[in-house]
Image 1 (cartoon, rainbow, N blue to C red):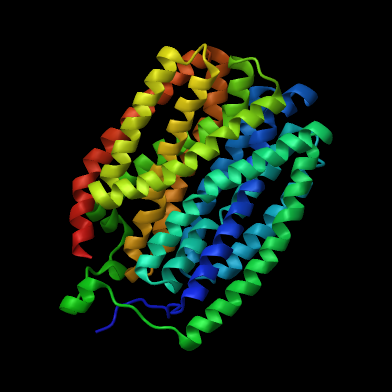
Image 2 (cartoon, rainbow, N blue to C red):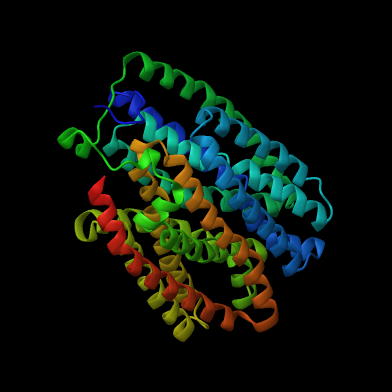
Length: 424
């Protein structure tokens, strides 16, 4: 008996490495076309006199549209060619970045950047689907772990690019450069993936799950309604944890340059450069999270709970001792963002792979990404509004409470998730 859903896998190491490389380059490029706005916010307030609330609304519009789009693209990714969806997402994002470079009002920016959110939402879930379809299971997890490093790498590249362009050309060139970089990547992606898919279809192999190979049956994921999957696997709680991690991960990164500029009296360009310290620390966090999960907990939800707990401790140190120490603040915020990147790997990257035999990797990935970016949307506007009305001190305290909530939710869901993964 064969699984209900199969695609031919790539068999040779060279092709697998090519998938790793092209997916990494492609997804890294998406950050250039989305984080460029975050990196430029301080300069936009200084040079064009936009307010925190106005720019926070633009950032929130992106994340809200991205979250809604993730839900849609997750479903599309299981029905439409992932290769095509990623190509369309990058191409449209490139055009919208060009339009942002000539926009003059925050109302227009809200429209353009929300459309950019929809365009960029076409990339992750279909890409995860393609990886699960075309790589053996072990390599699928490795590829998704490697793709987690695109967050710090993309952040580092984007913030470096933005700091240099703002110094010499102003913030508008930031969007033009993103457009010119993303479109060629989209073309290369389409060509390379087309060749790899052809190779897999004409010389690859199929792969059965261990449960299916041993018993001839497997948990009937393909025919199970989504609401039943939510109940059996704990996806509802996982989605709640994903939303809280989105609030912390993207909210902190969105407002980091502004927080440093106002809290520690750095200029806009220096604040952007200081923010570049975080992705360097984050790279260690990605690998540490994967190592902890493999060697110690062997449960994505328990690992996520531990990382949320680490975030609580780091934020308490920031609140107690980091107010007057910029180096300590950067270190603690580096720990926080690293931990949240680890949570992202556990909840958003690894969890969907367990649904590969059902052909629902993209759907589950889209649902969890959607939850993540609902949190990102809330934080992008909410953090700016709270900081503007109540100050950064209260804002830091709210981060701590949210991280504690994330730890509790993941602990509650961990038992159900362990039981579910043992069935499939």
